[in-house]
Image (cartoon, rainbow, N blue to C red; front, side, top):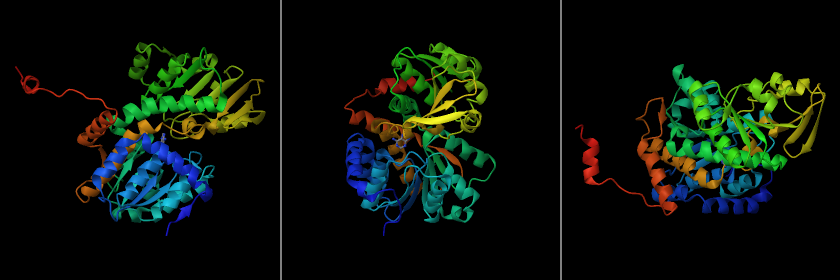
Length: 413
Ligand code: ADE
């Protein structure tokens, strides 16, 4: 019997169409599933991922490979309720709905853990941390886990460094076919999409401040520039800051950028990058958004406390009036603007991320008992398999090294 809790089972047919659309654009995930038949027969997979149409194609593929899947959302506001309904109807256990409170959100993650999965998949680390913190008795039966995002991988490194990690985890985020594309082009496009859906402002001629110049920050900066915005980058890492300078962006401190920006986007993975002291300096009408995993990058609590009033202007767009009389607009409550105000990354890019996830699950299962409780990178051959399949699905041929070239490259003379 299917278990879980979703918002509206009757939305399933709308969700089914979304899944159909995503599937058309995710040939690599489908190919992995087709190639591996029933390789996951009887394996229980617990997944905490954003419940989107793309995640739907991933979990449906695992399910069709024989796995029993238990799925919860990895953000209280990112679930697509129609997709959740379609998956539930198909036999996937789902506990996720849009607009969960904190207890409901963690309740669903606990529900995944309590299903006693053999393999755990996570986006952000909340499931891994729950198992290591509260449900440690489950850790021994877990064959291994995967982690989708930079923030989650950092949390796992911290667990590993503290010698507390209890099972092997594959850092899917570290696959080149994941972060070079998903973090950069996926977040770049979906962040612009989220900001536009919540505001519909003209980007051309605006000054956009991007905090952080990791892969996500880079993606946002290049896409904003492509839309005609003047882009300012803030960074704490001197090498990345230098790269931003040489990529042609204006680099300065948040203190200075605060006075200049029309739109601010955080993408650092860090805490309180935009604080009240910055917000007070901003122009009347400044727009604030976050694209990092957690809603900690903008000091929303500080903004709430200092504001004299607040009102909803449109969906996922709240106006705050400051004591100095200026107004700022916070999008998506400071949560992931691309998944809350838009639909997350497009299917084409999630195709690579989730092909990596599916291959990582297959690898963990095949190598059960042989791996150490460590954070592993995605095996290189799997990363390359994803790139090859993606190129092939796009009808792109590439050259192969000739014998002479191989000899030339391997000769020290
Ligand atoms: N993270 C970012 N975009 C996503 C999407 N479309 N589906 C699942 N996780 C995501």
